[in-house]
Image (tube, rainbow, N blue to C red):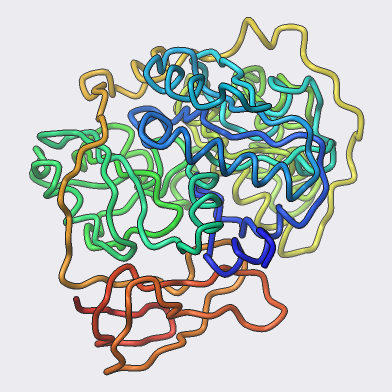
Length: 437
């Protein structure tokens, strides 16, 4: 069995949040493989912890990926500030062809377009993917899972950071399907009375007050904050209110565009023009929507650049959804030229954290053996890009640790789901499987 099939059977997906099934990437051809360890979301330390603890496994996964795609170059992109992780990875790379690329502490250094340019000097074509310039990019934890797949071990656990308003911020590894409530309890519990979670990060993550949300293969962390934290209040504002405020108050100052990371890389992303679509509801909206096509949803425009605290990122999200629904493809400029002011306008993480009022929560959140052993897990049947799995078990079935419990429909894009521990199936629905230890 080749590594592509081993990775497919192990259910490996992009562990950084994207969740794209990794076996599809490994079936391609490329000259460069990049491990994305940039981890630029404020307060998250999951990737740094993985590199500190599992650098050897990560490098082994990179080598396997290089063999699969025929690459001669392997690179780990990692922020220079993460000294322990840099040391561990540098040591693990000794005697291999894998190199280390040190990155500055900027946001969003982990964006694929940005990372590929920093590592290779290449610019992905508008609307394209790294493969278009001969590159495969995966999260560092994904490469650890690739190495495990080569040894016949499927993805059954996830490493994530619990940070923010908790007593003991930490990074921990838990079985898939563990509730975030149990993870927060392991971190000493919330220190605010009415906690809200930013799952996956403050900038690009999902905001919810559902503490019983299960951990999936793409859950990189959860930041706990009070409901009245200013950023949380903004994120919880209904879309209709966001649009109404933007329609009435946007004065087209261009700050959102001038600080947009994709715009500074040379792509035709102009959030200030997208904001015009809120006012042109009968005519012209489609034209202005197109300026959102290359948006990476990093959130800088909304949470940092806009002096009026409007919602250009959310307007871009809506525009992209409307274009997808109408099957509108990118038809704008195809040439890309880096903005001459890019380096001077890159945003340091410390400045971003100060703006977000997160400085008080800036803790290392090192990995700890938290001993989280839930007696019951709710395993989602959709934990990747593509199609949800079909349950391969029924109520009353006894399963073993690592057994496949969710299968991908024939010819569909998806990733197999496995039992995180031995137990009995107590519930099966169209969305999840409940397993009791």
